[in-house]
Length: 395
Image (cartoon, rainbow, N blue to C red):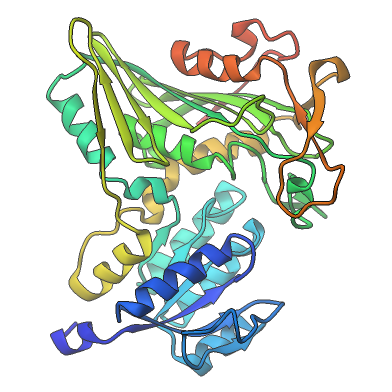
């Protein structure tokens, strides 16, 4: 691209402007103010108001994505829509020669992921997947520490996510908390959507990012809420080279906590709170060292790729391992409903929700999540009476 062309803001469309899409709208507004991108279209069933589009200039709106692309001449599309729609929308953009940022998870099955990724590659367009934690500069710093032998030989990686969500959260959309709708995969579970970053980040720190890196996945999927999908689950991944990665997560924590990934070594450990870009190195006989790192926004990375050839941080191939884990979860039996005496009701927390909204808390789950990350164990191995033996599936 010529320097003159590179200096022009790239025209972009946002697909899915409500819910999480509002974060992308705010990011587009920020980058628009820097002269790097120009929002030319919004595709949503519910159009945005003039107030919501204030500061953007003229913006076309339509619920017909293909027509919107043709009318606006967009170069970039940001897709933040229900999980089952990602592949078709991405392929529509690819056929128009439009480059992409697709929200995580990229697809609700490995087959859909391959259909999307192969179509994007054949079209020759660029695509990044919205695992924003993989834009953290802490990853490179941790890899450098590991390469230098800072904690000796790595012995495994554990991730922990203890979050709080209430019944209103599972009513946020028709697909919320669903595994499938009318035979179509959705996979809106704790490990595949809200805490998917924990899975992807742990795999990235292990150096296992492609589909071929996964050998086996053990799953334990449970639910306390009256939903179809899982809200309290864990997985253990064995990679092709024999390393182990566990992820334990819940939306039924007693107290919400920052999710983290811990790399265990023969001479210490490294803990990474990935939402905060914060790293703690602990080694016997030495003072703990804490650092906070910067982060590259993934849309900015896509813009830099298109204008200057900067490598993409999260191309589809770099999420193949995550998709193998998602596929193992998809193929596992439906989540087990926890018995009534394994959870208790508590007041809800969703702002604006109706008075009386409740959430379900699994007593002791906060400690189990942390113990899993510490010991690389599954819930059943930690003595959780409600956890059934794991489902083991090849990668």
